[in-house]
Image (cartoon, rainbow, N blue to C red; front, top):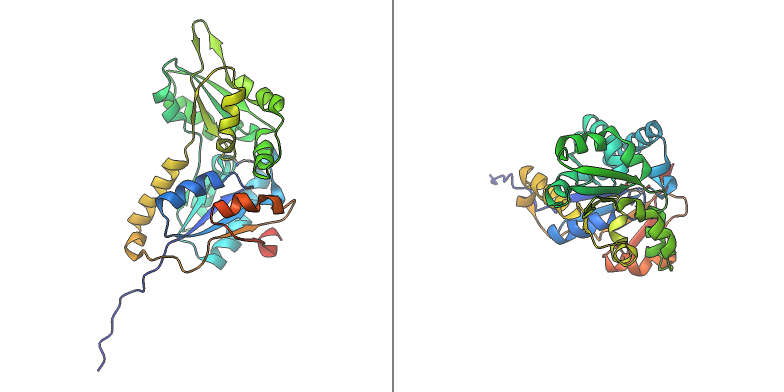
Length: 282
Ligand code: DGL
């Protein structure tokens, strides 16, 4: 009689990282640093970019349909919504609907409130994210001792995508988009800006250049990577760590897609396999 073993073959965790475009790469970058051996599937819903201009109900319906297909086909261990707009609108619904753990990205308002000495800080996000109850609740819950300016920018996510394509940016437009986040009140002025859109960390160096004065820019990406690590450890995935046998992949749903000129940027992130996915886009 042969002894039967119940040992599972080591398996690298499979992580879906999701955004409307390529802004979620700022989260993917931190995830890869924290969990280098995981297998990543980056989904860019380029067919509906930018989410910041979509109606709330339309976005929830779209995300439910998309994750239905994605989870059934890919069987991920965890889904990271690397998009503040999608997280503040649909995270609760996604968690209710699916058994897979979902990790969201929301503006780091608690961190900014703790870090601001002037007690004047701003949240720079898409118009949709700043308008959500979720964001307003974070302000009420964690920043009651501060004066918080919520700034919804229509153009910054698009500027970040231009930046990734290697195009020269209009610095006057960038200044115009961030200027409302810089507030002076008596002797005090804004000293922190919580970046509430995953596209924006890509522009931080340029923001520093055109900003009226220096401030701290707060990016939640590293905290999201830590949280993902924690969720995977709790579900025992870390015990099965092995080097992922499949290369990381980027799938996009349509629209303007991912231009050739993005390839240098993507290769630097270890994403050589970039494909349009008809099923997800359909
Ligand atoms: N990267 C997305 C976010 O974090 C937004 C960009 C868009 O408007 O689609 O909110």
